[in-house]
Picture 1: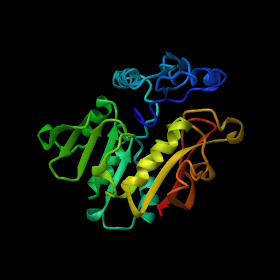
Picture 2: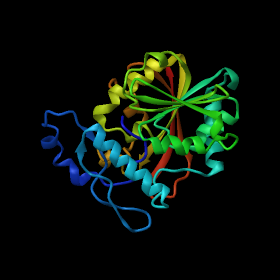
Picture 3: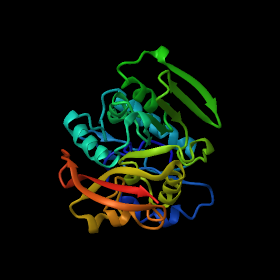
Picture 4: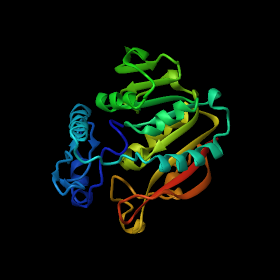
Length: 285
């Protein structure tokens, strides 16, 4: 996985579906980026870098996305409403009942999600990973109680690692599919907001295998994803992909290493018509 979960924005993938078989016949390693040119919410034409590409080009594409966001363009996936975060937190804590001071939460492909800081402010330890430096920089800025001096930086295995002086926050700038032995069995819980739903199907297996490696036995995944009203018609159209529990629990996804606990239904409302923000909870076998 090369970038933040929702940076794809909301684009119609159907124009590319017919050409995917041809493109995937190439021999070079490929990764999928979002659809054709799409109109953002302001009605402007927004180029979402619609092509198959290698990781370096993909990283450049996501850097452009973040440059647009930081310049005041389409804010895409962001949820900044505190009431929405409170609703998500209530679901999270209903299943993750360990003391925050003893709970380490993995936030894969978190972007600059304010929920990461909310968890930190409540005493949880948090770790996040994203390929784009701008995304991690914005995430660090959400830590309102911190100054630049509170963060230290080191590099290891093609990854830039930012550590907070509290010892409770670690942000990695790197590929989420890269093997990381130091993270195996480290996390009590996983907070996934739309990351899985942004993945091309051919990457789901690898992503879920990594999450399984990093999650302790009995650890909880709290996962949010999109459910579209015409789910069956658009199940292969994305990102974001429309998902139900049965899709999450396929053997090539979370089904191999997790048990399904509960479907939460709509977690909080979205402004986009025809699309719901739904929640699911799973436990590591």
